[in-house]
Image 1 (cartoon, rainbow, N blue to C red):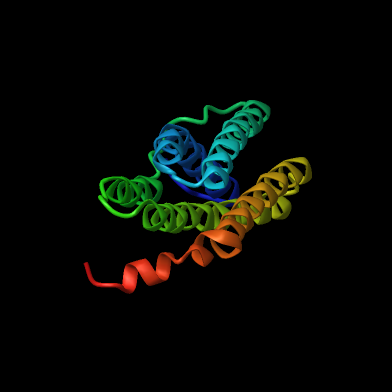
Image 2: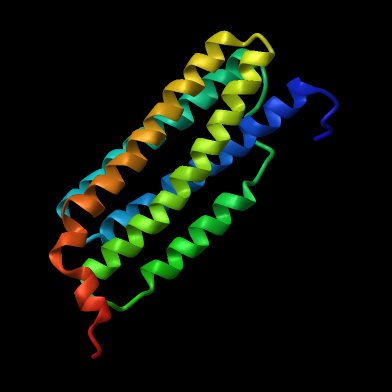
Length: 170
């Protein structure tokens, strides 16, 4: 796609997000299945439901623009998911696995927050205020998911002795 103006750039960013969210819909069930902590598993499953909603919101924006959401493959999300798949291959203590899953999930959340923040700002600049509000709602949900993951890590997982287990030889 040629990017000749801000509107083209906005559409390209939305297509990137649409691809990223669809890739994540495929990856989250595997991450949830690998989680040991009930709260982590629940958070990942809840975010899967939210992610499906994010896909629908993006479809709605594309529909209102009269455009197709397809045509872009988000390489960054593909890379983040590949790293997440490396985590899934670890053979380690269940608490260490959960810590690794949280790290992988938070890298994804931060990428998504950056993408939604940029897209929201572009929407505002282009006068697409309703789209900006929709994108802000998704940005808020991504931020909440990130905070939930931090809460799980700091509120119990890391207090269970995972650091001592990791530091002890053998």
